[in-house]
Length: 462
Image (cartoon, rainbow, N blue to C red; front, side):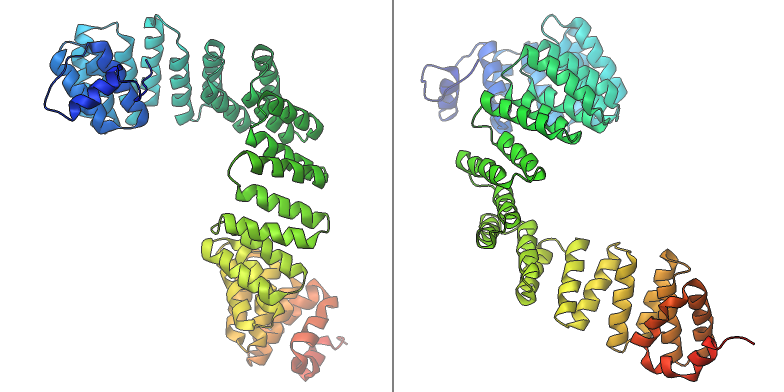
C-alpha cells in the first residue's frame, strides 16, 4: 500500500496527526504494517519504532508487527534481542518463511553466510508467493563468500521470476564480469532482451560487454537501443561517447556528451571528455575552456586539474603547469603519476630541489622505473648531494642489478668522494656490462673522465 501525505483520508496522515496530539487512535494491524513499511523504506527508523510500539500495544499477538521489531533490532545490530524474539516466534509459527529470512539476516551479520543460505533455501520451500526476492538474497550471500558462479545462478533465477528486478540484473552482470565471462553475459542479455525488449538497462549492460570484447560497433548499436528505449538515459549517452572516442569519432562523441549535459545536471566527467575531444581535434581554445568548466563544476576532481596541467605542459607553459599540478596533488597526495609530473615540470623549470623532492616521493609511492632512479640521481649530483645520490643508486640496484647506467654513476660518485676502491669495482662492472656507456662518466663527472683513474682503467692490458 503506497501513501501520499496529501491525502487526508489515508492512514499515514491519520497516524502523523495522532503523533502531534495526546489522542491515541485505533488502526488495524495491516494499516500499522503499511505505515511501518513506509517509514522503513524512507529510513525513518525513529518513526517506524513508534509505529511498531503503538501497533504492538493495540495488536500484541501480531506476528508481522513483531517481525518488524526484529528487523529494527537487526538494523540496530541488537542481534541477541532479535534472536530471542525470533526463537519465540518460531515456536509459535515454525512454517513462517519471514522468520527464516530474518534469522538468515542475523547469520549474515555474523558472517555465517553458508548457514544463512541454508535458511533462505528453507524459506523458498515454505514460500507460497514469488520467491524472486529470496533468490536475490541467496545471491548476495554467495557474493559475500566470493562464490560468483553460485551467486550468478541465483540472480538469474531471480530474474526468471521478476524481469524488472534491475538490482538482480546489475548483480548478475557483475558476476559475469568478475568471472571474465563477457560472451556468456552477452548470450544471457540477448535472451533477457528477447523477453524484455525495451529494457534500457539491459541494452546498456549489453553494450558494456561488447566494449569489454572491443566489439565497438556492436556496443554502439546496443547503446543506441538503450537510448531508443529511454531517450533520457544519461548513462547510455556517456558510454556511447566513450566508444566513439576510442574510434576517433570525436565530433560524434562530443555530441553524445553534450546531450548528456542537457538531460541532467552537468557532470564533470562529460565536460572533461568534451575537452579531451576538442584537444584531439586541434581546437585548443575550446579544449581548455571545457577543462576549466570541469574544475568549476567539481573543484575536487583531480583529473580536471591534471588535464589543464598536461594542456599547458604541451604548450610549454611550465609555470602554469606547475600551478595546476599542485592543485591536483592537494586533492590526491598519494597519486604517483601526479608526483612524477610535478617532478618533471620542476626539472624543466630548473627547480632542482623541488624536482628531486618530486622524484623521491614518486619512488616512495612505488614507482620504481629505472629512469626515475637515474633522473633523481643526476639531480642529486647537480645539487652536490653525492652521498644521497649513492644511496639512491644502491636502492636502485636491488631492482636493476647488473645495470651499466647505474654502475657508471656509482663509479663516478665513489671517485669524487675519494672511495677509489669502490669506484674501481663499479667501473669494472660498468665496462663489463656495456663499454659504450662510458659517455655517462664524461657528461656527469668531467673531472673523473680526465683523471688518471679512468685512463688506467681503460688502458688495454698487455
